[in-house]
Image 1 (tube, rainbow, N blue to C red):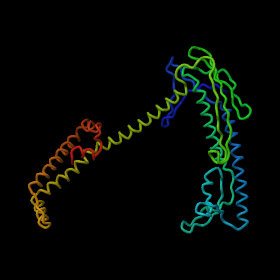
Image 2: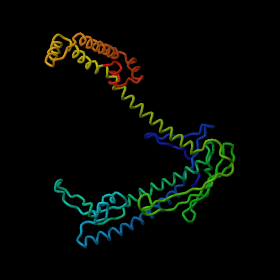
Image 3: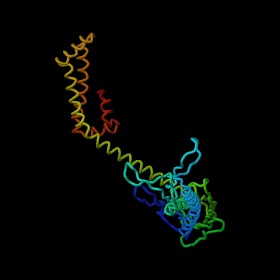
Image 4: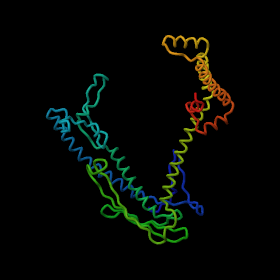
Length: 353
């Protein structure tokens, strides 16, 4: 039945949210393609697809049986590199259910498929059904988008009418949708859905694909304001933005949880750094440097070395003092984090250590 009134729902993570029309607190109506016509499309696609695949099944089975009768174990084809063996693995992942000759793998000690030697095949009915369902869903979605582009968010479809969207001849579905505007004015949307088929290499799956075209017009009361389709698109975009923001917030929270532990972790590290620096300008450390200078015959400026290392120690001490402070000042640490100083390296760079 045509004219089903449904709340538009969009997926956000695993949740569904109803779209409502804020004007007069009315729920926005969305055109949904009649289930009986959707089922008809699916059945027609499925049957035509199976028939198309069956042609390959018959051809391959005859070809492979002849190969076996001739005592051969593989087929060949001409390529850029010359004549090469045909590898049939990819075909087994399509709409064919192929049985291959099996051989014992000497390394793994188990039977494995010889993808150069297919023995027989049948139509993969499950794969054909899934492909037909996918094509059906695509065609139905396009039809719904076309009608919903003529519907205003304030319009109400007439669910009491059966309308007349029906199967026509020569791959045609046609009819109309009726309803009322927010001012109770009548309108009618006429739709023609024409579909045809492409076979073989001209099709998307290599066998048979349905392609659809539409003609649609609105008559009677004019469409006022945003269309249902635009509202659907806007809601979908907002849902994606919300989901993206939620993911970003989740990552930021995880990053903050890690950053909160940094003052304690870095204090232990910086204690070792300060001890290492202090050891350089100790009597023992300076004596070691003087000895190295003599051995390598270069002049050692001891005063400059002490001044330079002392400055580094002061810088490290400044950071250590702040690290100790932040261990008891989460607000101050969070303020630093929010300013973009949110990693260990950025904190070190800020202090020049």
